[in-house]
Amino acid sequence: ALWEELRNNNNNNNNNEHKSTPPLLSNLKKACTNLFAPFTDSTGSPTTILPGLFLIICIGTVLGVSLPKESSLPTPWYRTFSSIIGYIYFTAWSISFYPQIFMNYRRKRTVGLSVDFSAMNVLGFACYAVYNASLFWSPYIQNLYRQNHAAGESIPVRSNDVAFALHAFVLSSITLGQIWYYDGFGTSQTKMSFSIKLFFGVAFLVLVFSTLVAIVSSKLSWLGFLYILSYVKVVITLLKYIPQVVLNVRRKSTVGWNIWNIILDFTGGMLSLAQLLGDSADMHDWSGITGNFAKFCLGFVSIFFDIIFFFQHYVLYPDKRGEGNESTYQAGLEPQIPWEEEADYDYDALL
Image (cartoon, rainbow, N blue to C red; front, side, top):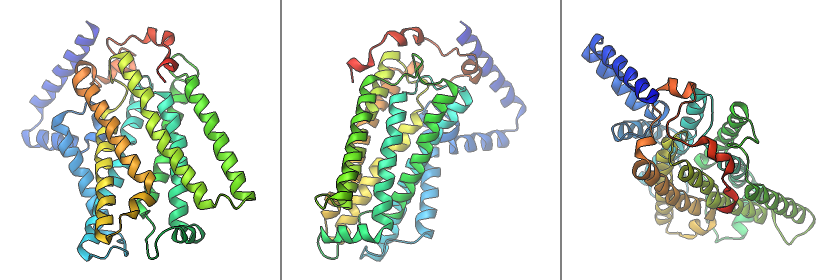
Protein backbone atom coordinates (compact mmCIF):
# COMPACT_ATOMS: atom_id res chain seq x y z
CA ALA A 1 0.00 0.00 0.00
CA LEU A 2 2.80 2.41 0.87
CA TRP A 3 4.53 1.56 -2.40
CA GLU A 4 1.34 2.29 -4.39
CA GLU A 5 0.82 5.56 -2.52
CA LEU A 6 4.35 6.73 -3.26
CA ARG A 7 3.99 5.82 -6.92
CA ASN A 8 0.62 7.61 -7.20
CA ASN A 9 2.08 10.73 -5.57
CA ASN A 10 4.93 10.64 -8.04
CA ASN A 11 2.50 10.33 -10.97
CA ASN A 12 0.40 13.22 -9.64
CA ASN A 13 3.52 15.40 -9.34
CA ASN A 14 4.49 14.53 -12.89
CA ASN A 15 0.98 15.39 -14.15
CA ASN A 16 1.04 18.76 -12.38
CA GLU A 17 4.49 19.46 -13.84
CA HIS A 18 3.26 18.70 -17.37
CA LYS A 19 0.29 21.04 -16.94
CA SER A 20 2.50 23.99 -15.96
CA THR A 21 5.31 23.35 -18.47
CA PRO A 22 5.05 24.67 -22.07
CA PRO A 23 4.77 21.82 -24.60
CA LEU A 24 8.01 22.74 -26.42
CA LEU A 25 10.01 22.84 -23.19
CA SER A 26 8.36 19.65 -21.95
CA ASN A 27 9.24 17.81 -25.19
CA LEU A 28 12.80 19.12 -25.08
CA LYS A 29 13.18 17.95 -21.49
CA LYS A 30 11.80 14.53 -22.40
CA ALA A 31 14.16 14.25 -25.38
CA CYS A 32 17.19 15.13 -23.24
CA THR A 33 16.10 12.67 -20.56
CA ASN A 34 15.80 9.88 -23.14
CA LEU A 35 19.10 10.84 -24.73
CA PHE A 36 20.89 10.47 -21.40
CA ALA A 37 18.88 7.38 -20.46
CA PRO A 38 21.96 5.32 -19.48
CA PHE A 39 22.49 7.75 -16.58
CA THR A 40 18.88 8.58 -15.68
CA ASP A 41 16.92 5.37 -16.28
CA SER A 42 17.33 1.97 -14.67
CA THR A 43 14.15 0.34 -16.00
CA GLY A 44 15.46 -0.17 -19.54
CA SER A 45 12.20 1.04 -21.02
CA PRO A 46 12.01 0.37 -24.80
CA THR A 47 11.21 4.07 -25.34
CA THR A 48 14.59 5.08 -23.89
CA ILE A 49 16.85 2.40 -25.37
CA LEU A 50 17.13 3.79 -28.92
CA PRO A 51 17.71 7.43 -27.84
CA GLY A 52 20.26 6.29 -25.27
CA LEU A 53 22.14 4.17 -27.81
CA PHE A 54 21.98 7.02 -30.33
CA LEU A 55 24.08 9.16 -27.99
CA ILE A 56 26.62 6.31 -27.67
CA ILE A 57 26.83 5.96 -31.45
CA CYS A 58 27.36 9.71 -31.91
CA ILE A 59 30.18 9.83 -29.34
CA GLY A 60 31.87 6.76 -30.83
CA THR A 61 31.58 8.10 -34.37
CA VAL A 62 33.17 11.42 -33.47
CA LEU A 63 36.03 9.66 -31.70
CA GLY A 64 36.48 7.15 -34.52
CA VAL A 65 36.64 9.82 -37.21
CA SER A 66 38.85 12.28 -35.36
CA LEU A 67 41.38 10.00 -33.64
CA PRO A 68 44.28 8.16 -35.37
CA LYS A 69 43.38 5.07 -37.39
CA GLU A 70 45.01 1.66 -37.47
CA SER A 71 47.65 1.95 -40.21
CA SER A 72 48.06 -1.81 -40.62
CA LEU A 73 44.59 -2.13 -42.19
CA PRO A 74 45.09 -2.09 -45.99
CA THR A 75 41.72 -0.67 -47.08
CA PRO A 76 41.55 3.13 -46.53
CA TRP A 77 37.79 3.40 -46.04
CA TYR A 78 37.73 0.42 -43.71
CA ARG A 79 40.33 2.00 -41.45
CA THR A 80 37.82 4.72 -40.62
CA PHE A 81 34.95 2.25 -40.36
CA SER A 82 36.92 -0.03 -38.02
CA SER A 83 37.92 2.95 -35.92
CA ILE A 84 34.28 4.04 -35.61
CA ILE A 85 33.16 0.55 -34.60
CA GLY A 86 36.01 0.31 -32.11
CA TYR A 87 35.22 3.59 -30.40
CA ILE A 88 31.48 2.94 -30.35
CA TYR A 89 32.02 -0.29 -28.45
CA PHE A 90 34.69 1.39 -26.34
CA THR A 91 32.14 4.09 -25.46
CA ALA A 92 29.37 1.57 -24.81
CA TRP A 93 31.50 -0.70 -22.64
CA SER A 94 33.06 2.23 -20.78
CA ILE A 95 29.77 3.97 -20.05
CA SER A 96 28.22 0.65 -18.98
CA PHE A 97 29.93 1.00 -15.59
CA TYR A 98 28.42 4.40 -14.79
CA PRO A 99 24.68 3.53 -14.52
CA GLN A 100 25.36 1.16 -11.60
CA ILE A 101 27.63 3.68 -9.89
CA PHE A 102 25.02 6.44 -10.24
CA MET A 103 22.24 4.14 -9.04
CA ASN A 104 24.26 3.12 -5.98
CA TYR A 105 24.92 6.79 -5.22
CA ARG A 106 21.24 7.74 -5.53
CA ARG A 107 20.06 4.81 -3.41
CA LYS A 108 22.89 5.07 -0.86
CA ARG A 109 22.87 1.27 -0.82
CA THR A 110 24.02 -1.60 -3.04
CA VAL A 111 21.49 -4.33 -2.19
CA GLY A 112 20.73 -6.21 -5.39
CA LEU A 113 24.30 -6.01 -6.64
CA SER A 114 26.38 -9.14 -6.09
CA VAL A 115 29.63 -8.53 -4.19
CA ASP A 116 31.08 -11.68 -5.79
CA PHE A 117 30.44 -10.25 -9.25
CA SER A 118 31.96 -6.90 -8.30
CA ALA A 119 35.07 -8.39 -6.70
CA MET A 120 35.76 -10.67 -9.66
CA ASN A 121 35.34 -7.72 -11.99
CA VAL A 122 38.20 -5.90 -10.28
CA LEU A 123 40.59 -8.85 -10.58
CA GLY A 124 39.52 -9.61 -14.14
CA PHE A 125 40.01 -6.09 -15.43
CA ALA A 126 43.34 -5.79 -13.61
CA CYS A 127 44.58 -8.82 -15.58
CA TYR A 128 43.05 -7.54 -18.80
CA ALA A 129 44.58 -4.08 -18.37
CA VAL A 130 48.09 -5.49 -17.86
CA TYR A 131 47.63 -7.80 -20.87
CA ASN A 132 46.47 -5.04 -23.24
CA ALA A 133 48.86 -2.36 -22.02
CA SER A 134 51.88 -4.66 -22.33
CA LEU A 135 51.04 -5.78 -25.85
CA PHE A 136 50.32 -2.22 -26.95
CA TRP A 137 53.18 -0.29 -25.31
CA SER A 138 56.07 -2.70 -24.72
CA PRO A 139 58.47 -3.17 -27.68
CA TYR A 140 59.94 -6.22 -25.93
CA ILE A 141 56.53 -7.93 -25.68
CA GLN A 142 55.71 -6.94 -29.27
CA ASN A 143 58.94 -8.57 -30.50
CA LEU A 144 58.09 -11.74 -28.60
CA TYR A 145 54.65 -11.74 -30.22
CA ARG A 146 56.10 -11.37 -33.73
CA GLN A 147 58.57 -14.19 -33.08
CA ASN A 148 55.68 -16.51 -32.22
CA HIS A 149 53.44 -15.52 -35.14
CA ALA A 150 53.67 -15.13 -38.88
CA ALA A 151 55.93 -12.43 -40.30
CA GLY A 152 54.18 -9.12 -40.82
CA GLU A 153 51.29 -9.97 -38.51
CA SER A 154 50.06 -6.93 -36.62
CA ILE A 155 49.62 -6.72 -32.86
CA PRO A 156 45.93 -7.60 -32.18
CA VAL A 157 45.41 -4.86 -29.58
CA ARG A 158 44.10 -1.40 -30.43
CA SER A 159 44.38 1.83 -28.48
CA ASN A 160 40.69 1.67 -27.57
CA ASP A 161 41.28 -1.80 -26.05
CA VAL A 162 43.90 -0.36 -23.71
CA ALA A 163 41.78 2.66 -22.81
CA PHE A 164 38.77 0.48 -22.07
CA ALA A 165 40.69 -1.99 -19.89
CA LEU A 166 42.30 0.72 -17.73
CA HIS A 167 39.04 2.65 -17.45
CA ALA A 168 37.10 -0.51 -16.56
CA PHE A 169 39.55 -1.41 -13.80
CA VAL A 170 39.18 2.02 -12.18
CA LEU A 171 35.36 2.05 -12.34
CA SER A 172 34.93 -1.56 -11.20
CA SER A 173 37.12 -0.68 -8.22
CA ILE A 174 34.85 2.28 -7.46
CA THR A 175 31.78 0.02 -7.60
CA LEU A 176 33.37 -2.43 -5.17
CA GLY A 177 34.29 0.51 -2.96
CA GLN A 178 30.65 1.61 -2.94
CA ILE A 179 29.59 -1.79 -1.59
CA TRP A 180 32.08 -1.38 1.25
CA TYR A 181 31.11 2.27 1.89
CA TYR A 182 27.31 1.95 1.81
CA ASP A 183 26.75 -1.56 3.18
CA GLY A 184 30.09 -2.86 4.42
CA PHE A 185 31.59 -6.27 3.71
CA GLY A 186 30.52 -9.29 5.71
CA THR A 187 26.81 -8.55 6.13
CA SER A 188 24.22 -11.12 5.04
CA GLN A 189 23.80 -9.34 1.70
CA THR A 190 27.42 -8.34 1.01
CA LYS A 191 29.32 -11.35 2.26
CA MET A 192 31.65 -12.91 -0.28
CA SER A 193 30.93 -16.60 -0.83
CA PHE A 194 33.45 -19.28 0.08
CA SER A 195 33.60 -20.43 -3.55
CA ILE A 196 34.73 -17.02 -4.74
CA LYS A 197 37.26 -16.74 -1.91
CA LEU A 198 38.66 -20.11 -2.96
CA PHE A 199 38.87 -18.97 -6.58
CA PHE A 200 40.73 -15.82 -5.56
CA GLY A 201 43.21 -17.93 -3.59
CA VAL A 202 43.84 -20.27 -6.52
CA ALA A 203 44.18 -17.37 -8.98
CA PHE A 204 46.67 -15.66 -6.67
CA LEU A 205 48.81 -18.79 -6.41
CA VAL A 206 48.74 -19.30 -10.19
CA LEU A 207 49.80 -15.72 -10.90
CA VAL A 208 52.56 -15.76 -8.27
CA PHE A 209 53.91 -19.09 -9.53
CA SER A 210 53.78 -17.92 -13.18
CA THR A 211 55.62 -14.72 -12.29
CA LEU A 212 58.39 -16.62 -10.53
CA VAL A 213 58.76 -19.06 -13.44
CA ALA A 214 58.95 -16.18 -15.94
CA ILE A 215 61.65 -14.49 -13.84
CA VAL A 216 63.94 -17.43 -13.10
CA SER A 217 63.32 -19.76 -16.04
CA SER A 218 63.18 -19.63 -19.82
CA LYS A 219 60.35 -22.16 -19.94
CA LEU A 220 57.80 -19.37 -19.68
CA SER A 221 58.29 -16.11 -21.55
CA TRP A 222 56.70 -12.86 -20.47
CA LEU A 223 54.38 -13.17 -23.46
CA GLY A 224 53.31 -16.54 -22.08
CA PHE A 225 52.71 -14.91 -18.71
CA LEU A 226 50.48 -12.32 -20.41
CA TYR A 227 48.51 -15.09 -22.05
CA ILE A 228 47.98 -16.61 -18.59
CA LEU A 229 46.59 -13.24 -17.46
CA SER A 230 44.25 -13.21 -20.45
CA TYR A 231 43.05 -16.73 -19.62
CA VAL A 232 42.40 -15.68 -16.02
CA LYS A 233 40.27 -12.88 -17.40
CA VAL A 234 38.35 -15.30 -19.61
CA VAL A 235 37.75 -17.69 -16.69
CA ILE A 236 36.54 -14.79 -14.55
CA THR A 237 34.17 -13.72 -17.33
CA LEU A 238 32.82 -17.27 -17.46
CA LEU A 239 32.15 -17.28 -13.71
CA LYS A 240 31.52 -13.72 -12.57
CA TYR A 241 27.96 -13.40 -13.88
CA ILE A 242 26.75 -16.57 -12.13
CA PRO A 243 26.45 -15.00 -8.62
CA GLN A 244 24.40 -12.12 -10.07
CA VAL A 245 22.11 -14.50 -11.95
CA VAL A 246 21.61 -16.54 -8.76
CA LEU A 247 20.96 -13.40 -6.72
CA ASN A 248 18.31 -12.19 -9.18
CA VAL A 249 16.62 -15.60 -9.12
CA ARG A 250 16.64 -15.75 -5.34
CA ARG A 251 15.20 -12.28 -4.94
CA LYS A 252 12.86 -12.74 -7.93
CA SER A 253 13.79 -9.23 -8.95
CA THR A 254 16.45 -7.23 -10.77
CA VAL A 255 15.97 -4.14 -8.61
CA GLY A 256 19.38 -2.84 -7.61
CA TRP A 257 21.03 -4.32 -10.73
CA ASN A 258 20.95 -1.67 -13.42
CA ILE A 259 19.81 -3.12 -16.75
CA TRP A 260 21.72 -0.44 -18.68
CA ASN A 261 24.87 -2.30 -17.64
CA ILE A 262 23.60 -5.16 -19.76
CA ILE A 263 22.22 -3.13 -22.67
CA LEU A 264 25.56 -1.39 -23.15
CA ASP A 265 27.57 -4.54 -22.47
CA PHE A 266 25.57 -6.41 -25.13
CA THR A 267 26.11 -3.58 -27.62
CA GLY A 268 29.83 -3.52 -26.89
CA GLY A 269 30.17 -7.29 -27.16
CA MET A 270 28.49 -7.45 -30.57
CA LEU A 271 30.56 -4.60 -31.98
CA SER A 272 33.78 -5.97 -30.51
CA LEU A 273 33.28 -9.24 -32.36
CA ALA A 274 32.30 -7.37 -35.52
CA GLN A 275 35.51 -5.32 -35.43
CA LEU A 276 37.70 -8.35 -34.77
CA LEU A 277 36.16 -10.33 -37.63
CA GLY A 278 36.19 -7.33 -39.97
CA ASP A 279 39.83 -6.52 -39.26
CA SER A 280 40.85 -10.13 -39.90
CA ALA A 281 38.91 -10.20 -43.16
CA ASP A 282 40.39 -6.89 -44.35
CA MET A 283 43.94 -8.12 -43.68
CA HIS A 284 43.16 -11.63 -45.01
CA ASP A 285 44.69 -12.92 -41.79
CA TRP A 286 42.46 -14.85 -39.40
CA SER A 287 45.26 -15.51 -36.95
CA GLY A 288 44.31 -12.27 -35.22
CA ILE A 289 41.42 -14.18 -33.64
CA THR A 290 43.65 -16.88 -32.16
CA GLY A 291 46.29 -14.28 -31.29
CA ASN A 292 43.69 -12.31 -29.34
CA PHE A 293 41.80 -15.22 -27.82
CA ALA A 294 40.84 -13.23 -24.71
CA LYS A 295 38.97 -10.60 -26.70
CA PHE A 296 37.24 -13.19 -28.88
CA CYS A 297 35.99 -15.28 -25.94
CA LEU A 298 35.11 -12.22 -23.89
CA GLY A 299 32.61 -11.08 -26.51
CA PHE A 300 30.81 -14.43 -26.81
CA VAL A 301 30.62 -15.11 -23.08
CA SER A 302 29.34 -11.63 -22.28
CA ILE A 303 26.64 -11.87 -24.95
CA PHE A 304 25.46 -15.23 -23.61
CA PHE A 305 24.99 -13.93 -20.07
CA ASP A 306 23.54 -10.63 -21.32
CA ILE A 307 20.74 -12.62 -22.94
CA ILE A 308 20.08 -14.36 -19.60
CA PHE A 309 19.86 -10.99 -17.83
CA PHE A 310 17.53 -9.63 -20.51
CA PHE A 311 15.26 -12.66 -19.95
CA GLN A 312 15.28 -12.11 -16.20
CA HIS A 313 14.62 -8.38 -16.44
CA TYR A 314 11.97 -8.27 -19.16
CA VAL A 315 10.30 -11.71 -18.95
CA LEU A 316 10.70 -13.36 -15.54
CA TYR A 317 10.51 -10.33 -13.25
CA PRO A 318 8.98 -7.48 -15.28
CA ASP A 319 6.83 -6.19 -12.41
CA LYS A 320 9.82 -5.63 -10.12
CA ARG A 321 12.37 -4.26 -12.54
CA GLY A 322 11.85 -0.52 -12.17
CA GLU A 323 13.71 1.89 -9.99
CA GLY A 324 10.44 3.45 -8.90
CA ASN A 325 10.21 6.57 -6.79
CA GLU A 326 13.57 7.66 -5.37
CA SER A 327 12.04 8.19 -1.95
CA THR A 328 11.29 4.48 -1.70
CA TYR A 329 14.99 3.75 -2.03
CA GLN A 330 15.92 6.36 0.51
CA ALA A 331 13.44 4.79 2.92
CA GLY A 332 14.60 1.27 2.09
CA LEU A 333 11.15 0.25 0.87
CA GLU A 334 11.94 -1.74 -2.26
CA PRO A 335 8.83 -3.87 -2.74
CA GLN A 336 8.20 -7.60 -2.46
CA ILE A 337 11.82 -8.66 -2.03
CA PRO A 338 12.60 -11.04 0.84
CA TRP A 339 15.72 -9.37 2.27
CA GLU A 340 15.33 -11.26 5.51
CA GLU A 341 15.82 -14.59 3.72
CA GLU A 342 19.17 -13.64 2.20
CA ALA A 343 21.17 -14.65 5.27
CA ASP A 344 19.85 -18.22 5.16
CA TYR A 345 20.56 -18.82 1.49
CA ASP A 346 23.53 -20.98 0.53
CA TYR A 347 25.03 -19.40 -2.58
CA ASP A 348 28.04 -21.72 -2.41
CA ALA A 349 25.75 -24.66 -3.14
CA LEU A 350 25.03 -23.20 -6.57
CA LEU A 351 28.56 -21.92 -7.23
